[in-house]
Image 1: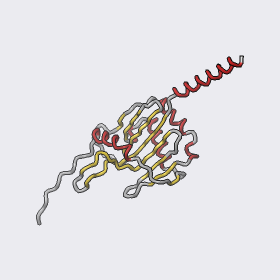
Image 2 (image 1 turned 90 degrees about the vertical axis):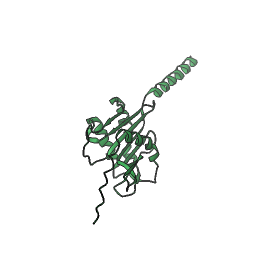
Image 3 (image 1 turned 45 degrees about the horizontal axis):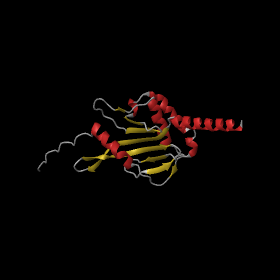
Image 4 (image 1 turned 30 degrees about the vertical axis):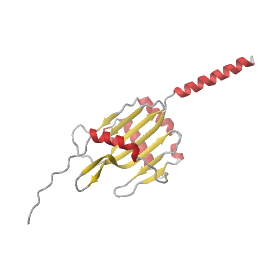
Length: 198
């Protein structure tokens, strides 16, 4: 009888472990806002296709510290870790994203528009290696995605965030930057005005 109970316990533990492993969860979320591409040479108006001018950065990794970075115009980037009190229940909120059945997409203007805000990229990686990339302008998003965008930005700018040391994030973004550059290249260089002799 004891052998039977032990076998049943082992079998139930095995089944629960298998079920747990099969459950898809959010492994990583990276959101960054940028104002465009950095210039390689401002006098010649040449853009660097692998370097975005990142102003807001958010990084969530399962079972890790949340990190954010902010850079105001003409200032150095400030790095923060998110206060643990602000992250209670965050994994549950993010895992509910899977219920939205998100797909990679671009939400940009179909025609040239004057826009004076940041462009954003949201990268979501799941435990089953699903990789979702959403590039967008905030007011073109659906209401659910806009809610997520605002929720993450509130975390980025929370007054409870604690200053921390530099952490690298540019390397992660080079491949994304090149894809964004190829799909939505920056405007062409302005024509040079003829020199006027006096």
